Image 1 (cartoon, rainbow, N blue to C red):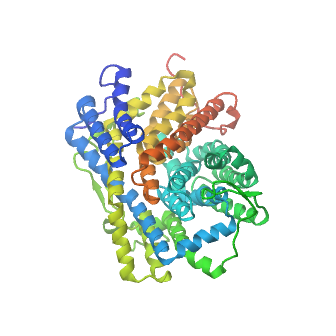
Image 2 (image 1 turned 30 degrees about the horizontal axis):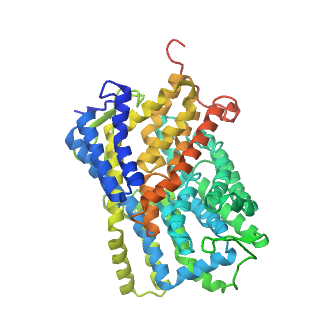
Image 3 (image 1 turned 180 degrees about the vertical axis):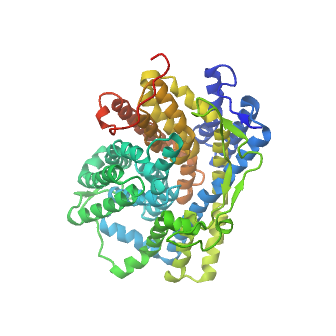
Length: 569
């Protein structure tokens, strides 16, 4: 017998919403205000979520505990596995001296930290988001920025700020694909709608990022480069999303932006070189004599291998082979039960059911299946790229083994924190308290287009994933749009495009960034730094969606499904 979610357990929408907010308030309060470690905050938030789910909402005890274990397992694999792989490669390059050469090669292109942030965090990070997503862009970009001489806190915050506008098309368009499946809307139409919202923010985010790190005067000093970086990506983002589809938006856009900015920096230099280390800008290029091209290629090869791996692992045909499904016209190399076994979570699988208005069905059973796709996981591709780099970097296998063990040992606390964060997110999802929070925003009437984007922001802040937010709130967004007479395509897409701004404040991403830069106990500082930026950008997305529901309705793709009128209208 399935347990039906209850969206007003206290018979008062206000009180039910306040109680549903408690786990998030405990987590963020301890992390940002009380100065507690992320591990303690996550555990406290998880305990609060379990108390609310069991004691207030009425979720069966065994189902609530199963949801927590399901989330913890997902946090360790595949999310934690990506962090392990990225940090293993980072330590290999540091051990071999390749990291120092990489740092100098970036400095030779430009010693200006503002420009390095654009190249690494925004352009290269967008490519990584498109190819892998799920934590890889933040982990790798933050590590590279720290290796390039950025203070650890700044490297973490910049990587998080940059990982916003590309997120809706991350992991080869997975968030858009998921939203289409959940809402029943056309995938290409959602891609086109997102491609008429996010390009504006792809122009804004690079400038916002530079201003956040160097101030407005610092932004003025490199505005041509910021324009080249953002414009090249936004043009590709708009064109590919509208004319092709969601899969390759970030991959192509990231590469084009990276190449365009690198080429531009060959012919243009800022009048003053700005860096964190120098505190004050200095005249001249600050560029040292060029390194031999072969030496630079040797140093960057491991990260090139990582990029190739995460892209290849994301290609559907390749993923099919790695998951034992067969592709390229042939059968599977290994059976699926070996390379991607699936396990129905006991006491949870189809034990919980969504009910209206969270779903358009009378009762929608929630699946709970854990997939141990150890071969097709992005983290495996990263680890294999690292192993292939061991002889290339001249490191002995014995030393590489010690580095791997040290990496796992040093990341143990961070992995436990990620597990607790995801456990909290899964308890929130399966108990239905996420829907309670969402319903609180649906009562805003004519202002709902603005709050639709904030609901997406909330979903990502809770789950750490735009894909999960779309799966969680997509159906609710469509139901609400139809009840209010709004365009479902616009409102549902806003869940994903508003959600991207929540990526920089979700606990999972903050822990990943802190881990990649060695700031395991400074997660609260990171959160306090990025939260105002996240809220401001989410509000701007909401404003754009509100305008597109009215004065800018011409921006909504023609032929989008009409809203169903409510009774009596």
